[in-house]
Image 1 (cartoon, rainbow, N blue to C red):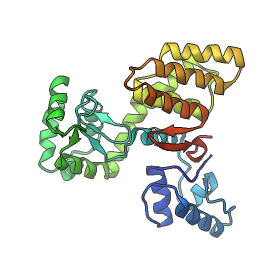
Image 2 (image 1 turned 90 degrees about the horizontal axis):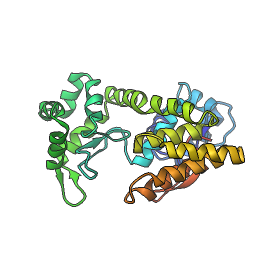
Image 3 (image 1 turned 135 degrees about the vertical axis):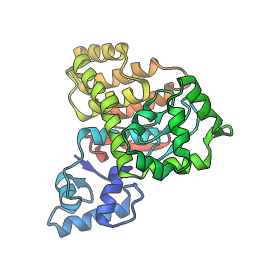
Length: 288
């Protein structure tokens, strides 16, 4: 397991901060060079990639868990960081945070309920009581309110709200709350379903596929699980089973999102791919 060139996101920022270099969250050549230099100082092989020994030496903490690594990948697919907020581009009202918690599902409210009120007030200021009042409204009213703050064809969120939610996402308590809800609402159910539907799937990529499907589509469809089971019986190969699941899962969604779903699922199933114009190799994300 390692993080290497091509990885992005909060875990890469954590590495960069520990190295005291620019923390842009992109693992590029400069980060690789800084990692190699740190490895040399710690008498480790100077590979420029962050394995478990390097993480412990540089960051001073245990290597990120499988959940944290899968979360980083799905967050990159979703195009979200802890503080990014979007308007009503997809009918969800407002979408915010590491995997897109939103008004429609109520997940945004669930996250905010775990953040100390004083932190919410500090970040949002006068907008805090407005948001609290909206969160207790019926679903349709929440979505309409989010739409009223969304402008232009791209439904971009008004700057005041965008900036306020970005400030909130920078707070450690907000990041902890987001991870807690992601684990409870998406990670645990996805891994339970994987164990019940496809116990022959055991690799980190399988866990990542189930988690990503749970975040984006609400879970792996029964038809996709059956396709994976059939491929496993025929080939006895996890990659074949994952690919069958990926393709069948894509067919279960609307035509509008089908290619987006297919590219994400195939990228995870095969370990490489291009999603939203970015190339991915899961070996660089601690998901070999």
